[in-house]
Length: 419
Image (cartoon, rainbow, N blue to C red; front, side, top):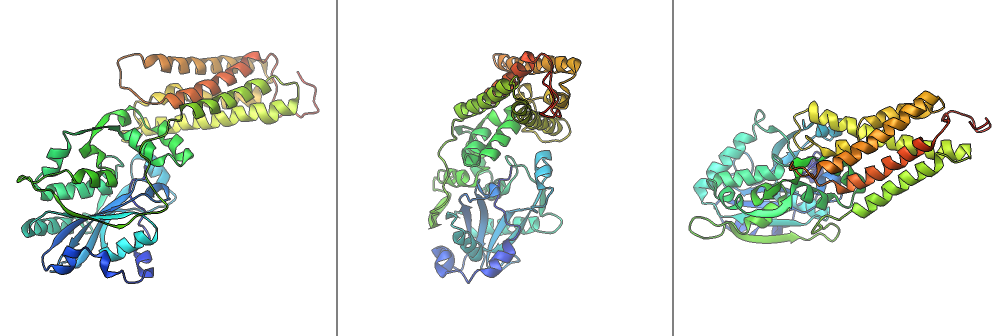
C-alpha cells in the first residue's frame, strides 16, 4: 500500500510555482549562519498514495554542500507506471531519494492544501555535518534506490532512522518501549476509510501480521505519528529533541480520522443482499430474472471472491511480501469459487449442477471452519467484516444451487421452455 506522497512529477511542479515567501523559512534558518535540521511533516491528501501523509528532512546548510543551502531530502519518489499495482502486491516496489529546494517544496504542498508542520531538531554542528555526509552518500546514484516496504521501510522510516542515527539511537531507545494500543491494520484502515474499495481490498489482503500490537517506533511509519512521538523524546541531559515547532499551513480540505470505522454491519448487509438476491432469483420462474440477475450476480461474486483468493495465494506463496502471509480470509474466499464460476454456465447439465451444489456447500463449510479456527490459540486476525460478507453471500449461493432441481444454462434463450 502506498505510504509516501506522490512526487514523481515534483520537479515539474516546482518549476510552475512562484518564488516562495520568506516566512516559509523557519526563523532560526533565516537568522543564523549555522546549520540547522528540520523535519517537514505533510498531512494527508486526496490521492491513495497521499492518505498516509509524507515527510522529509530539511537541512539549512550555509556551506551550500551538494544538497544546496536549504535542501529537502525526500525518500518518497517512485514511478507510478501501469505495473505499480502489481509490484505493490508482490512487495517489489523500488523507491528512491533526492534533494529539492525546501521552501519551494513546502510551497507546493501548501498550494495543494496539505497541512505542513516544521520541527527543528536539536543537533550540534558536528552531528549535522555527519548527518549531511551520510545523506549525501545515500543520494549518490548507486545508493539512492531502495526496496520499499510500506510498514518497515518507507519515506517516514527513512527520516526516522536518519534522525535516530544522528542522535546515536536516542529516538529508538525511547520510542520502542512505548506501546500505542494500535496495529498496522488499525492505522491503515483509519487512513483509508474514506475510500471503500481501497479499504475492502486492504482488509482482505492484510493477514495476521497486520494485527500485532505496535510500539511508537513502529507506528512512526506514519509521518504524522512520528512527528507527534518526536515531541516527547528527550536528549540525555533531559532537554527536548524538538527545539521548536511551526505550523506553516493547516488544510481546510483533508484531515485524519481519529479511529477506523466499524464496518461489520454494512459488510453483513452487503453479504445478505448478494446472497438473498442469488437465493431468491435462483429458482425464479422468470428465465430472464434467473439468468440476468440471479446467476449473473452469482458469477460476479465468484469472480471477485475467487479472483481475490488467487491473488492472495500468489502474494503468499510466490512473493516475499510478509503482510498477506497466513491470511485467514482464504477460509472465506477461496479458489473453489473459481470452480463455481466455471460451472455456472453449465448448470443445465444435471451432473454439473450436482457438483456445483456440493462445491457451494464446501465453500460454506470452509466459511464456518474459518470461524471455528478463531477459537484456537493461533495468531489473531481481525476480519469479522470479511467473514460476515462472505458467509452470507456464499450461503445464498449454496441455497440457490441446493434448491435447483433441473438446472438452467446461462446461455439459454428466454423463449425456450424452462426445465
